[in-house]
Image (cartoon, rainbow, N blue to C red; front, side):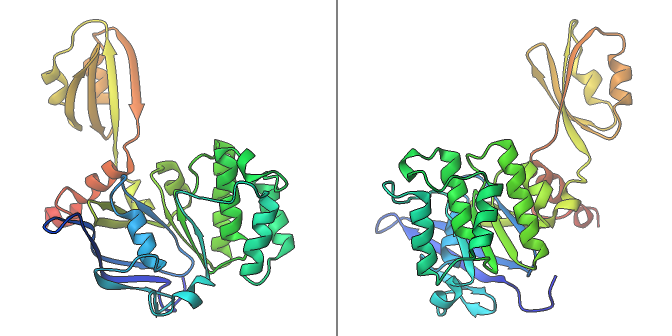
Length: 312
């Protein structure tokens, strides 16, 4: 991390849309967020949470109803033209000229930006396995996403803002994307990405924030979040097991019936559960990791307090 000014800093940033004369919708409510140089920051939330609204405000594509956004210590609105020269952006929905080839699009965007490092461009297209000679109309969804990544990255911007960057990429390309982002970080540059993919966030992000209903519910390091010590366990047995036999076990909670058995939340060791199940014929045990939002709720609780704060 650098001791310089934050790369991204928002102060009560808000956006309200008017549905009609009497109704309004708060797309973003008083966002206070700081992202430091060299971070890979994951910005998470369901559709409609306000992630894309935040990105549009940062890029001055829309104007805030209240508050402000600062990029590299400068007001995102007052200095947007100069700031955009330091930013690479990949939108969630990428609309390109269908009749042009990938190469023609790259050349055009490169001229607008004042030139492109040809060697780095070749490195990107090689690692992403992208053929620039094909017309955009013939690109698959995954190849369009790859081209969007190339356009965002090819000028080596100080800040990458990526909205659902791996959508449409196969698992191997997702791994390549992760490696590219870590390379960006090694060079001291910053990545701000919205994502709903837990694996992606766990692998490359330093910190994550979760947005729900236009409000930032929590910001935490990935290492802290992934220490949430619980799993979802689905047990299917041949004979009936009474729910109370499982509910009374240490570390077991949220027991619910499913077809042929039970689903439960397990914290700690499996041994107490296995001992209770030992007299029964167990057909199947399925273990699932919690979602990132469940990890947040485990760490912070529904009222936004940390576990430590709730105890004290």
